[in-house]
Length: 474
Ligand SMILES: NC(=O)C1=CN([C@@H]2O[C@H](COP(=O)(O)OP(=O)(O)OC[C@H]3O[C@@H](n4cnc5c(N)ncnc54)[C@H](O)[C@@H]3O)[C@@H](O)[C@H]2O)C=CC1
Ligand SMILES: O=C(O)C(=O)COP(=O)(O)O
Image (tube, rainbow, N blue to C red; front, side):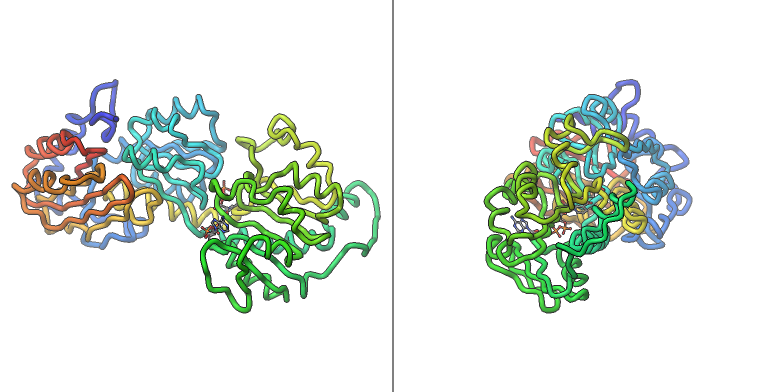
């Protein structure tokens, strides 16, 4: 388990508690001083949950907070984090594991997209890390359980790129039906090939959506507006948009659909969800689209089905292994079947760009960066994907000697009694606690705390056997 130093930045390898407490008690920033002299109200644009008269809470000087952003996180997100005073390093691509391990040792905050793998092996080196921001929808690239059990909160952006993915699917459905990519490639090579054979309108055709969540349901509306019939399969019973209809099994969907499009998360159950048997169940001359995760389709099986003519076309945006950055690299070294795939006709290959639009990326940048700031500065876990959602009304400027205690602990009996014995010498103004699996999250605002008492308060909580992480914000 991490030591106390995890929660607070270290310098020159020394444990950070003394420094954090003394740093936070810069004489000009003393709790005993006038609150208006000490605290200023947070910038409303970036602290949506806070109100104008609320007080900023900082665990340490914000300029000590180090943030590593990978995979070209949008400028909107970078701006928000820099405005807080955090030290932000932003790289355009992901990092190989050994370099990632070196970098992650230093930072309190990391921001990634779909490529960077934050496995238990990487996270065990992240001794100072308190929060991960996935600037995307998927969180399969993070070991969420390991993170929670080690007090690292994870946030994502649940729907800001859903529309972009749905629009890409619409473009690709028409492109496949008209063999558009093929004709364009031929003409780029100087070949005029005017054909109608095997080219169709999409009106009146059936679209089968697998996974009717944020992306699937958006796509459903767009497809119906082009006159397509929409059916969908999902493990959850969901109300269909407009006249779309849920079917009881994947097999039923595959038998009926002219176009099959996949929008499920990467899970054990969705691995190779479309393989030889499922491709056989599809209609002759049907089309397959995958913009979910590369593991969902058995690509060698798809190659065979396309070579035999059973599947008339496909569009792939995601692959089991994807390059770490832009440039050459989509070859057999990455996935052994890449050359066979590249040689197929009526196959649209895109480099995981489903969510890559200006609109989506700038919205995601704001959403995730705000969640990170609210977590670092205020302990708020609203919208967290691996921790219970806990928030308290903000402390105001009228509450000068207040401290916010955040205590992440093992979800075992008797912890609250012991925590409240420690907090009990002060007035607990408000408290919220919730649990998710093995981890519980407690937030309490307590009053009448002298600066000299904070270190003891922190240490007493740290000494409890149930402790995962303690943060004292004031
Ligand atoms: N290509 C790209 O750039 C992007 C890819 N994605 C991928 O698309 C996936 C879906 O995104 P959203 O629609 O936002 O997710 P979502 O969570 O809103 O919807 C997923 C749906 O799949 C269903 N589902 C789960 N397991 C299933 C199973 N075994 N069979 C059938 N249905 C199942 C769920 O019940 C849910 O309704 C994400 O998890 C992500 O991996 C998301 C955004 C961009
Ligand atoms: O949002 C997702 O889950 C995606 O797959 C998009 O990922 P990206 O941000 O483009 O790496």
